[in-house]
Image (tube, rainbow, N blue to C red; front, side, top):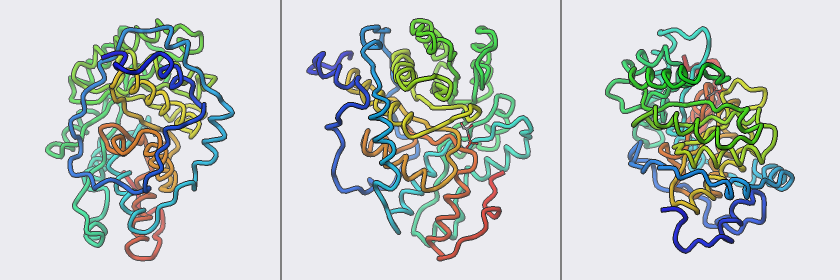
Length: 355
Ligand SMILES: O=C[C@H](O)COP(=O)(O)O
């Protein structure tokens, strides 16, 4: 399957220069596809491919071009009224509703799971003529996996566990592998691993590939999201290369951040990672998901991310199987905007607590 027949070396090389001229931005009517009817439609997993250092070395990132384009993104596409409500509902279905605090309790996780099952008040959904929806997943530390799995029983909502010594990823390697196994055994069907940043910072792409491959193997049937901790990778080129190497090693998703770095999800980083996903898709035919995480708390930011994804990867990515927001408080602001859409009034933010 790699490389795709018909895609010559030159075409591949063009796609690896992130930030170069972009002939691939679609200009069709900027509307949402039909509503999500199935939460997690089958998506073939990314099988990965052998590490190809020629490709990794060819990956470039033109930082100033990326930053220029990212700066134009907010407000570039505006969706209003019913369309905006539809986009916000779509955003909710793509949230990994997250609690990752040292003071997490079973009670907090149960309340979060109740919110995951019913993220929008039924009267608001009725007023919009919408069927019930749920979030994409609930994301917790290992110790809370069993509680979340029980609380979500019968809902079809997956539990994602952060793993491998999250957030720094500096515990002994065998323990990081064992941690994945424990979380899968406890019922997590998605595992968010953290990469060893030093491998990217020192350009040891073979070590990063081997680590990622081992993490994926330890996950078994559970889907694996690779957290790059982009705020600690130094350059956008490192972000682009780490994205490519993790995808080559079989990551199902690439994710920006743990939420604990000094800088978490940003638009330049997102553009870089999304372009890497696009290049990987062009080379191999495989679709890898994207998860910006950390600091995304406003409905308008969610709209910007969805617009970016639609422009760069197309409607196919606008669903939970290929896109998630890692966010602990975004849902509250979206619900507040939906209430305003239906009633014409804003309620206080405290009325939309999550857990
Ligand atoms: O992966 C998810 C993040 O840890 C959540 O970050 P946040 O609390 O800034 O929304």
